[in-house]
Amino acid sequence: MTQLIARPVDCSPVARITRSLLGYGVVAGPLYVVVSLAQALTRDGFDLTRHQWSMLSNGSLGWIQVANFTLTGLMLVAMAAGVRRALVTGPGATWAPRLIAAFGLSLLVAAVFKADPALGFPVGTPEGAASISASGMVHFVAAGFGFTCIAVACFVIARRYAAEGRRGWARYSRTTGVVFLAGFACVASGGGSSVANLLFTTAVIMVFAWTTALARDLSAPAVAAPATTSL
Image (tube, rainbow, N blue to C red; front, top):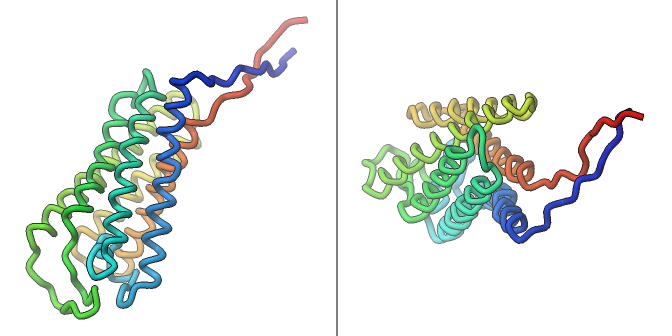
């Protein structure tokens, strides 16, 4: 006969700290996406089909996106610490938190070194191509590094989920990694098409949805487990 046996939820101080750190990962994605989209839809001259969200750091309201980068980066670093505590051993226990932390740190760098104004944004910026500044170059390099790290983290976590037999989570993680790399490759290639820009925006939303889902999954306490007893 099979019955469900309740397992006590770990309420120790160590477990509470881990869940608190992972909680920042739950908040980080929605915060970044909502704040970025709100600006993208309301700031004069910004076009989702032409401009990347990082360009929102420019102009008189650029401080909003700078703060968004900063807070999201700090929360992802905190999440990485929670992931390290949650994944004690096994696949991904070492590299997943490091890669997530690197992504968070790249956002902090992006907050300091802004992307260059371009393509008519902010209003008054020339439409034509301009030479890239030192700040813009550092921003681009940091973005490339961070985006690569979070994509690799998707595959590292997928390997762990596969080892645990959680095939749906493994497929979700792999798909997110593939779409994100494809989106970044399209926009980084300099094609500048509306399709490439929208694909990249979709990929960014997907990867932040994944960090939120991962943090929630790792912080969820197990309250019951199947057990078999013989009568």
